[in-house]
Image (cartoon, rainbow, N blue to C red; front, side, top):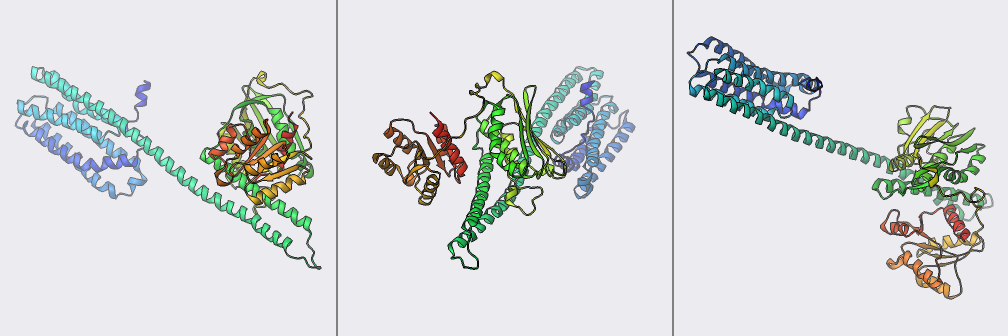
Length: 580
């Protein structure tokens, strides 16, 4: 019963325009040829006992053939072919089945066999009709099966009822022809279906490419704006510092410098987010799965945002037990940082709460805020690049609209489920689901159960190798301002010269690609060999996602992508100087 139900209806609800057009296009030709075959098959049976039935049959068959010819000629010009394809499909396939029934009825009308010549022509005609149907009905296999059975089934029964040896042989041959036609039609139907699926995939890929192109255009248009704005402000601020101030309007160097820092931070945010989005798009980011404690990660991720929350009068609360999860720790940290930063940014009063709870073999983590909330019509778009709610003027202090886009891309990369619930003036709740790992796989907690306090970096010795003079001088000045005992060199030869002068560094900061094609990794190896032990080394590069960067990461080096934030450099130095 189930199989029978799967065959109903014979005429599908959805008909592809190409299949329908092909069916209607060949309909006039098939109808004319069928009419000729009908006349040839019947002419040798006239002057017999069934003349009257034969004339009626020819009249009915001719009428249907004429109707199919006229419909086939009219269909290409009919607007209803596009607006009502189902109606035309019913006509095309339905009239085909009527023709099949008429062919089958011919075997009943000619129940009295004729001479061998007439019998041969009848069998050849019906066999040709059945085999020809496999071509124009291959896209409608159910209709093909019914058509072939209607045409050949009565003929086989007729031959068996006649009972002569000749007709028995003809019945067997017609049966085999019918089986061959159906098998051939099924193979053609499978081929057509495979081609149709391939066309659908190609069409989906084309639409996705067009959507990606349009999104990329919007993406870079917005990026162009968000890069030019701080660059424009930096130019004016730099000119303000360079121009001599008048007595009427003296220059407040501290204030202008503060604005410059804000502009640089804004440009750094844009470039970092653009690079991360690009690396995700081109597939240069490969997750490194490990088991880690979610509570430790939350504490580390939220610590830098405590001061920002306090400055806005917000409470930043973290509530998570000792839960073990399995994923890429660094990428999950990036997702959480973006969610927390976004929550604080759009919350004016109240609290931001991050909590995690086990749920079977998963851990459900939520970032909940009492912020401005998001209207339901905005929710479907909040994970798009540069799409922001409540920031029509594109104030950089409210972000750039890339944070949640990065959250979505990274969550997809890590196969994590991310969702949001929100309402205007009622806050938002972002939910992230992570795979849970057995607790025994976690590394033991350090004594005291709290992370070590960041050590001071003053008076520590740093050797900087950077071939770009401006970057070298700026970074050296920052290290000296922090109180480090720092030296700088453009390449390996000058760096080794500092060692010869008795300067033994505690840590190396090395640009990955130096002048004349030299590799920073080779410089690190040379300096370590000269010192005689493994010096901590930070690799700095502007080639995000390049083979050189991947090679540095594969060797276990910490890598900082330009433009580098001072807080990132300071964090590395603190960790390096605290190592035993």
